[in-house]
Picture 1: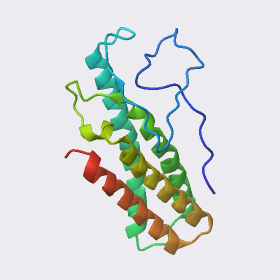
Picture 2 (picture 1 turned 180 degrees about the vertical axis):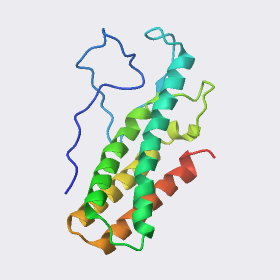
Picture 3 (picture 1 turned 90 degrees about the horizontal axis):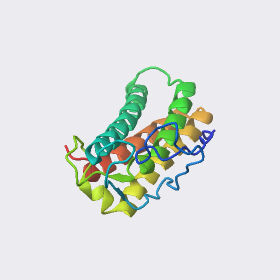
Picture 4 (picture 1 turned 180 degrees about the horizontal axis):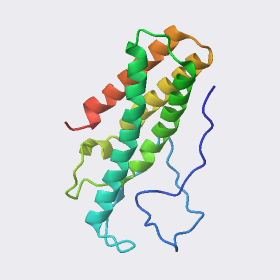
Length: 178
């Protein structure tokens, strides 16, 4: 069963949070559609360009930490000698579907020009179509996991988890600096 999509939220990294922020702010980012990079220029909402870049990086890192938490559970299920809990697999598939859909939004803010503590490779913003295709691969693999878990198919669940791992590794190989 596919996860219910979350409603669109305002752009997270290039809009300062304040009581004056418009409630109807929207973003056009979607999975596989990395919008043109938003350069950091000038002070916004009292945040210097460096503060904006640091905030963008922290947001990205937080998203990937949560995705890593989900992957630990999927890897544990993959390598366990016990039956797989399909309810957990379905929940984790839904989480990955939702989390992967946020990746384009958190990479809108181009932080290359500033000194940030990031593992994101600068080529993310040079090759948005390929980066988007890697995100699509992850989302499709999470979709496969959701379908397999809904059918209580342990073999297909294992294959879907492997596909998720391959999608993560393929993206990290190119777009994450070690």
